[in-house]
Every structure is written in C-alpha cells, then in structure tokens.
Length: 341
Image (cartoon, rainbow, N blue to C red):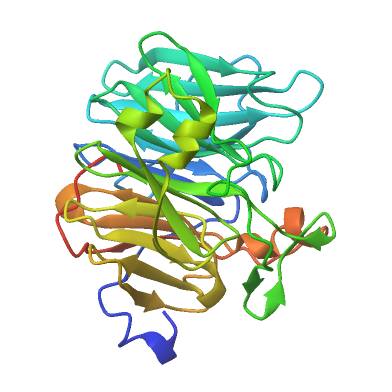
C-alpha cells in the first residue's frame, strides 16, 4: 500500500497479489468460504475462471470442457444454493452468450442458458449479474453499444430470457468522458462511453440496483416489476427510480443495511452510498485501487474486491503493456455482509 494513503486506508487488506497471467475480473465467495474468480479477457489469460485456494495457489475451475470453449467470462456469483453462476460472451458470426450454473457441492453442471439473436446483437457483452432465488431469476447487465445497453431477465425455472430497458435513460451511457489517473479512457481509438454494467440486488430480493459505467447516477427497480411479463417496456421504464449520485465505476455490491459499495474509477477509490443516499469515500490508492472491477460479499469475512488496471490493458491502449499489477482486496463492511451479492 502506498505510504501516502496507508493510514487513511486502514482496514483495506491486500488479500492476494495476483500473478501476471491471472488478471482478475469478477469474484464470488461461497458460504463455506471458497473463492472463485473470472479472469479479464482484456488482459488475456489461459484460464477463464480460477478457484483461489487457501494455500495461496490457483487452480482452473471448473475442471470440465465446454463447447464452444469459454471465451470472455465476466460476471460471477455463488448463490445461496451453492450454484456458481458465471457469464460467458462469445463474439463473431454466431454470437452466443451463455449463463452457466455450476453446482460446487456436486461438482457438476446445474443449468446452462444460451443467449443469442435477437436477444443480443453483434455489439454485446454479458457483463455482470444479480441472482434472485426468491423469484428464481437472474438479472444481467448487457452492456451492448453505448445507446442500446439493456438488462436481461432470465427465468431459472423455464429458461425464458427477456431483454428489457434497452436504450433507456437508465441503461445507456451518459455523454461524459471517463478519466482515470488523468487520462481519458478510449476504446478502439474513441472516447469510451460504456452503458449499464454494475448491478446488485438487496438482501430481501426486493430491489435491483444498476447503472451505466459511464454515468453519475445509480438507478433501481423492483424485482416484482422486472419479473412482470405483462408490463410493456415503456411501463417498465416508468417504474425505474433514480436512486443516488455515484462516481463512474465498474462494480457495486450491497450489505444487509443497504449500504451500496461502488468502485470509483475517476479517483482510484472505493466508496459507499449509505442508506440515506449520502456518498463517502472509504479507500483511495493510486496503485491498489487503479480500476476496481468487481465485489463479492462474504458474510463475516467482509467484502472482497478485484483491482486490475484495466485502462492500461491492450484492449484500451491498442498496444502491449507491462502494467500488470493485479490484486484481490478485502475490507470490512459497514453493515452485515450477507452472501451472494
């Protein structure tokens, strides 16, 4: 940890400094403390998912072959039934996304849902998700193009996939530059405008919170509305609430007291939106928190976060780089941190 912020960051722990071939994306923690992590395709890795073992080593997970092979895995969550859900995005002529559920107790496939046209098009990313076992639904942030971003709602029982809020005020990118450590972030040579990405669900499975990464507003909507197939998209959009101001960020999670933890890409920080909607910076560090990607709540263990310097990856810089300083971080939550968020 840098000397400048060592005292201010008291309570922020470097749980793992990751090797250069395991760039972190999202992280998931089971009830018995097993830790799983997707690796970020923007940096490239021979392993798309790893289990972080207690002895400090890493092993590919699951030890099974998929066809087509796993390609770009981002979102990752272990739900209360010990199903490890992860999102795989495959581009190309036969673009196809997959929502894969793996039973970590039986070590076998639980369910797999395929997502293809017309639910998604050429410009799509299955980015992050929230799992709602009360309604047996999965809510996915489908980043897509900056003006077509949407949420996907997956019915775990039937496999029905619906695209909702596509191109809505709450899902598309705001027309504002993302500045990280003094540099405007670009994608394919153009200023990045990234639509809906961070998403989480409260512990009562009543509200889903979500936001564009390129944006300063956090939104929420009730799960009963997202699961109401009789609502038109216009009617559903009208039920979206502007919840609070936020920094531009990649990941969010929530505790049992409705404190919402957010990555703050603009300030290399982690902050919290409290239940009264006020915002506070919890930790700031130009090295450790340079692009905080994902969070996982872990009960009494607190909250885990991944940090990956994504703005310095070849996908953003269009050139090879050696800026590979990757971390899993850990800190205590302000309220009880229930699992699966």
